[in-house]
Image 1 (cartoon, rainbow, N blue to C red):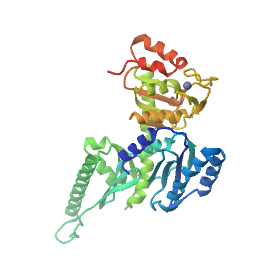
Image 2: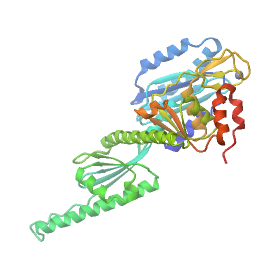
Image 3: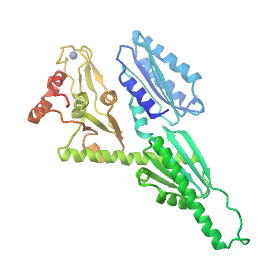
Image 4: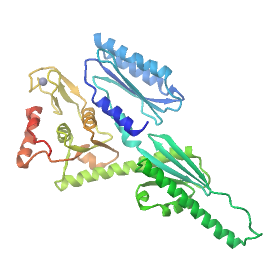
Amino acid sequence: MEIQELQGHIRELASLPETRSPVVSCYLRVEGGRLRHRRTFMNRVEELRRSFAGEAAELFEEALEPIERFLSGELHRGSKGVAVFSRAGRQPFFLALQFYVPLPTWIAADTLPNIYHLVELKDTYWRFVVLVCSQDTARIVSVNLGAVTLDLLRERPELRQRVGREWTKEHFRKHRTTRIQQFVGDSVKALSEVMTAGSYDHLILAGDPKMTAMVRRALPSHVAARLSGVIRKPGRTGAQDVVAESIASFVEAENRESQATAEELQRKLRTGGLAVAGTRSSFFALKRGQVETLVMDAEYSPRPGWVCRGCRVERTAEQWPKKCPACGSNSLEDLNIREAMLRLAEQRGCQVELVRDSATLRRLGGVGCLLRFRPGRGGKTRQQDRTRPERGWRGTARIPAPV
Ligand SMILES: [Zn+2]
């Protein structure tokens, strides 16, 4: 699956209108066309089943049916992870996605789909090209969401064994060096073309240490700038082993990048730049459509906010009021803040950067946003910012639109 296609599915899920029927979201690890942790899956389904009663219980069972059908008959042998979303009722919905990368076994039933693991997949398994070199082969492999989509092999033309006859050893050595350099040059040219044609932002070099060093020196600057890692492996190397290792190397590079985003967030906050941090400010910024990049700790798990069943007002407030201050309804429900933030970000096409092991981001409350524009004009905005949580969302309409 191409990243644009995944992005489209995430946006579809993030924009799915809420109904009273539960949406079952399943993320599952599969192997050889079968469910890897069947027992865990069954136990979790049983737990969820007990949490529903009456009509909701019926709708839950109906939503499960197509999931079971899909799992028992439609898994591809090469898949390692699947994500399935299902809802029954008046506005039924079903979406099943298969990936070449594993997903955690995780199942939930809520009024909206849970998209975190898909967002994480999009953020982590971006796309990249690997050049695998040995002394006499160069292999260009492009990887999209863990699947190999292009595999080009070049072999260095055989050297004729003419030592001792017409050629001196010295002559042979020089000839060989020239041939290797030419081979490296040709491989780099092909690599450049693949990266440009597919708009790849990341490159990993793998294989024979001498050859990878030569290739590295021969890279044009625009390709060298995209080098994310080098895997040194002497001798000939099969593309499949290298793909597995390069995924790990790529994930590491991706982690470094996202830590850099967390540092940028901190720098902007310190210098009064376009940034906010913390649950409440980030949630408001997303609601107002100000966000360019949502920066979230991978372990971010804020306390639930609430949503009013009557008027759909959503708040991140830590304490639940007895009734909705906007419409007076006393029918309030838990709001999963992390999911709500991801939904808003994906609906509006913001970048989402999930960050692992960043003490900086944790200090800032685990979440923050790089903004596209300021909340409003002058001191008034600050005043509004402070009072809005007590007044509800209606105030947001008064915020000037971006120019
Ligand atoms: Zn309300």
